[in-house]
Length: 236
Image 1 (tube, rainbow, N blue to C red):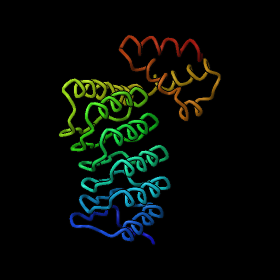
Image 2: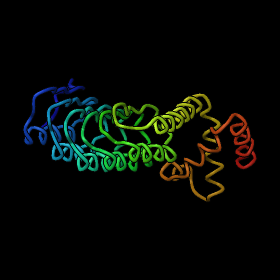
Image 3: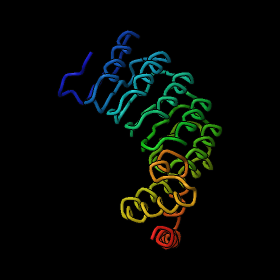
Image 4: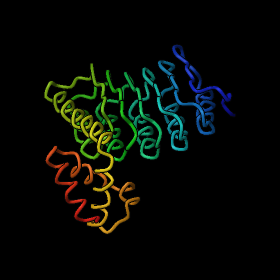
């Protein structure tokens, strides 16, 4: 099955769709090179539907926005999507509002965020993730500098948890803003870290060493200055 040549967005909202229809949509995603938005808000795909779509996400390279809010995917659905995130390189926005994923589902998604380099917006509102889910999410961005927007309203998180998440997201926004302005500095620090760890620049982008690059280059204005000075001394 192939998507029509001009079809960049697919929306099905309300009511419910049967499992076979979800599998058809999954096959479409797997073969499509044009669809960038899929909105299945409130169609009750459940755990099995989420698992089918997760399988397609692993092989899809164009979908940027996925809305699965109000679908009761549960913990197992969240686990499937978390696995897909680790192999996907195109998804930037994921809506999972009111899906009964709880603290366990939030924790597995947090684990996926540590290795994700594309997702910028995640909606987990009304999922009752509580303090445990918030703690897992607060830890995830330590290995992630791309997530800048996280919705967790109505999820039973105490004020302290919300503040911790807000601080980390602000840090990621700062990284993103600096990255846009100081690309030459970033590339020099990449070469510097590569020399210290005896790896090529391409290998850095495939490993966790790029977090070390971010630490040196973006932590503070002084850190950026010191990183540039060190990079010059190691690459000239």
